[in-house]
Image 1 (cartoon, one colour):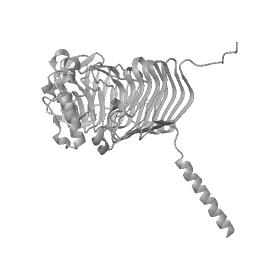
Image 2 (cartoon, helix red, strand yellow):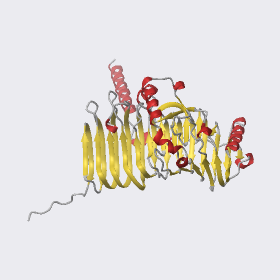
Image 3 (tube, helix red, strand yellow):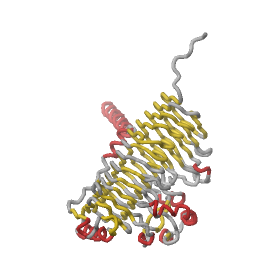
Image 4 (cartoon, helix red, strand yellow):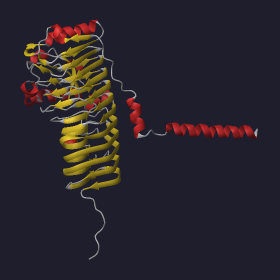
Length: 453
């Protein structure tokens, strides 16, 4: 009887220990590697279609839109196809709507230039604008409810924004405010129609509710609005893309309500954020409740307004973002920027930034719960953010900034081996708690103390 009791106690202890071990939190690298296993680029169809066989002429004059439409119909009929765009300059007067199992290979020496007549991008399609779902002008390259799609090659995709849609920036405010009002009031999306006269600029490339996406090698230039928008999509690989985009709001990549995203080996050169992770705006974002998560950004070269941004459209929450082994290709105003305000709600947590180098910036690391100093009622929970092995040559304004909210402080932020060679304001922390430092030098490192004279 005693031996049975002893055996039962031993087994009970063993099961308890196993349970504790199983619950042990994975390390950063274990989390990252588990995510990477779920990101697999789509297989590209071997059914090759040459765009010029469908009537396209790369003479910078002939409209290639009909040729793309014909080729994509064949892709749909044959349940797959790779459309090859050979060298030449192709005018495209209207959007390219990708279908499942289709890909574009824009070869070296090929350039797509989109036309500037707004009516060519109607009728309206389901899309999103600054975190609010609407029906509006079609993005220039658009994939909706499709899977296994790719854009590859060494050619150029030119949105021609400077000569077209980008001019709408100064006219957009009435429609922008109306979209936000509809968001807050819960107006059905089908009734949010922003077509002729609305002046909301379309994205250059948008994948909306898509699975298994690859964008590789191409140069993305001169976008009307955001450059590449991953919206409610998953299993995304973006690699070796180059950006040359200087119009207003020319973000590089905007993953929103999206998961399992790998962004690697990118040359950014944007007038706005290089990568901006988003999760919907205000009432609609909280209602949609699709977290942006499992996003890996590595081996990139940042240049533009900000390197990596999370927010400010953050209402469904963002977690598990990894920024690794990145450097800079030029000036950035801010290196790492986490931003929200009390209109948003949601959360930012489990963010890992490792082995990243910047040159001169205005602010090195900036975390704020009060972006633009506005909002109330829906504070964002920002916590569990880890910075390790970061260097900056100079921060001309501030080194480390944390601005929490009185009723929801920013907490559990770790800085390990962070160095900023020069900064007039080393730290500015308000409404923050649980801040941990390990080997942090802000400004000139102090070495041996001077001797008494």
